[in-house]
Image (cartoon, rainbow, N blue to C red; front, side, top):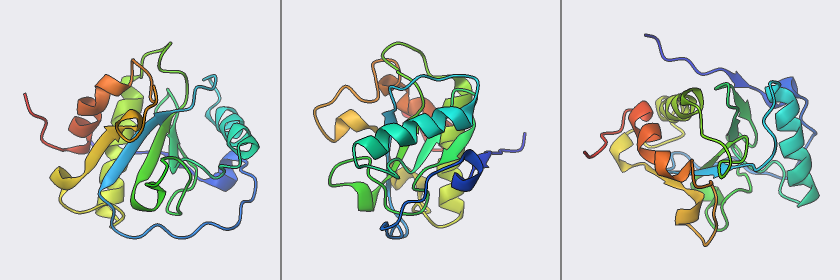
Length: 170
């Protein structure tokens, strides 16, 4: 089966213009997993515009590097630019946010697979270190006292690692 990730670019989902971000250094070795705690509907672009609206209101746009809809669609946030997602780690990590509240809902297999495949794409394109076993894939709560990414998503890091092709300990 061919691995594919659909990435909806900022202009495609209707992002507002945001100036002032810098290019991410290459390569990085850390991915932090978040949840948006915003509603997840059947419209990934609409959901992403709401996420951006919330981030703008907090002065954090473009925020997350990428957001992953329950359908498995990946939406570009900051992309390859430095975002605002994990305090003191923005310039050394990517922030993937799962759209929805994962204290209340379960992540879908499509989301977990998309996160893993996106890590592989970033690795193949030189944005993440080539040795995947050296990549730290962790819940946001590993970096600070927070409930993020929710009680139902935090335990799923091994699934994301598996989809990324990282050896998972038994």
